Image (cartoon, rainbow, N blue to C red; front, side):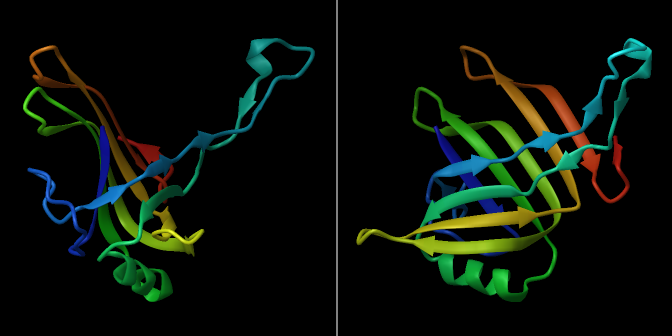
Length: 160
């Protein structure tokens, strides 16, 4: 299993088929939350929920050719399209995506580097205005079928 990211037209060092020049990620973290209040009296009809709070996506990766480009983006990059794909491998070793994210108007809101004497590791936070999340079921013969698709525009607070 591997996680790959394509950040606009900027290149990484991946050479895997279908992901040439993408960026390999070590981790991916993201979440959605909303406040829900349930009064002690009044039952379910009195429950209230806030609008969802969509967190930024935080990824980690090892230092590579994308690193100076990432720093430049963090300092003052413009909104870009970013793709993140979580993959598994088939019997031939080819990577097949089972979860895809497309992020619109993405900007780096955080960038940090750390090292304990080995190859540096980076943490990157991504802020975006819209996401397209697609889950792809892969059967025993590695045939993909989309089984879940969510598109949400944060600026409009609207899903489609």
